[in-house]
Image (cartoon, rainbow, N blue to C red; front, side, top):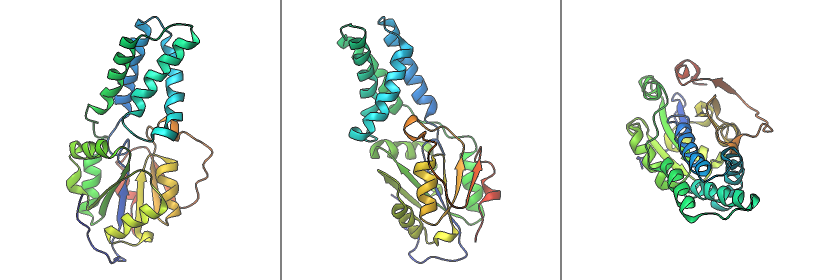
Length: 244
């Protein structure tokens, strides 16, 4: 989406690769509001809203194996949870209720995700220090394009890449496009398995932002090896990011 800066790594230049969802813009409240709306529909239909939510969260994680990060997955998981709950309660699923639940769940992808506090300032401050910035985000391509465009942050990145998954090879490729060496590059993200681990395996240093992650990535069994720093917000990034 954005032109390549250069192919030769400059030893004095520092590059920073950012994750998008829940690192620069927040999707948590969008999912919470959509899930709460669907839960109310389930409750109004005479079913247990709390039981529905527990089922939905488990089903949504399971559906990643077959539906990946498609925008169809979350609405489908919400409907499947309602249908399964009906079966467990010996009730007949009502098509009209299923349609209402699906519409409520789809609202996640119809609303703009708000920027995380100080996101633009943090990026601008890094640019002012001569850092080269890249955005590497995963998920449904069309949805990610929309979130990038509505974020208003596009102009701050020299490289933007949307991928199905982040691997060490993908991260190294983005760093190469930035024109920096991996030892002078950093990854900033909120997910240990998707951001921290592949970046460290690629030879980068990393900053983990302690922010929302969804159930699929809440696995405490991951072993993190390599140089990384934890921050609660983006505000202190400038004092952490440095060259070799």
